[in-house]
Image (cartoon, rainbow, N blue to C red; front, side, top):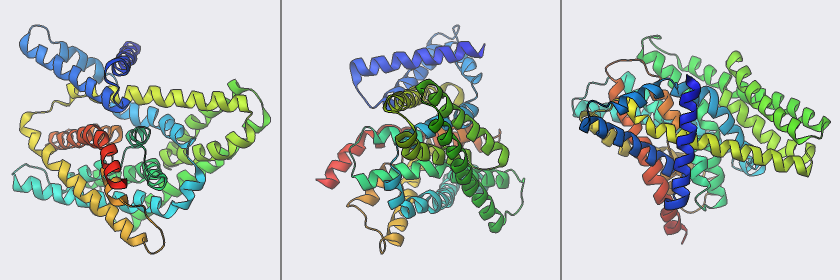
Length: 412
């Protein structure tokens, strides 16, 4: 039963969290991902040593019952984005709105095209059979900074307020754009469309982004009115759950961006609904509930991400694609951030080290993994999965752990 797999995953996450707090005290996302991978590799080694006891195969079969793409994109993401958005300061986001907008749009498109092109050149150089269309798909799925991973990183690093706002805003909004770019790239690679017109792509992006924002405003105000008419924390927490699930479901039906819609609704509730329509007691329970949701789903997601090694079927022969992808993604990220800063510098001030910090803090995570795992079976899939997982591991473990030192070096 699916309940058994979910129960085992929650218990594993709780155990990993206890071990981390008791012995390691690492950032939670880093610890859970690392321990998940360690357990997966240990099971694979046991299968090799004791071939008559296929533990890795048994656990992997159980994991396969949990559709990673659906778990991330259709379940956890809406709750995690809302939990992050309700604690965001609208005034700070508005003041850096142009920067965030350019990072979440220009940055995603440039990253998708740049990473796709350089990855294609590298694959040709090393005779790895991946055509350009599928390299562009890889560029699109690895382009967005993951909001779950990014917000977890922000909680563990003391950053300048302005840079923190830019990282937070980009992470909250760029995945909606990235999913559209990924969808177009996948259709092109699968020959579903022969020559996608730029105008059509632009209209699709506008429909997703603007439609999601409008929907979030509408449902957010409806929820605000509901909060304003009652004074019971249990009902108001229930209203917020209905807001998240109803908004995300409506966005999917209307063809708008679900992530953007719940982010906008969350910002509205966090900045207007909570201070104006909730009592102090309700605010305590409301924010406490969403902090718990964020912590619980965040932990489950990173544990699951680590254990997914068991079902990826990665081969040592594909290690090269992963090693190549890491510097390519970092170089293109540097170019995209540098271009954004140069473009907006005449009108906006930027803190010292903005380009370096925004480049290094670009953590990839569950969204990229979910998009990669949703790819159909084809010749390029193993190379793309290897490259995606390598970038995720490097960003979550190496970049997250070394970011505090980089920040101290730049600021001090």
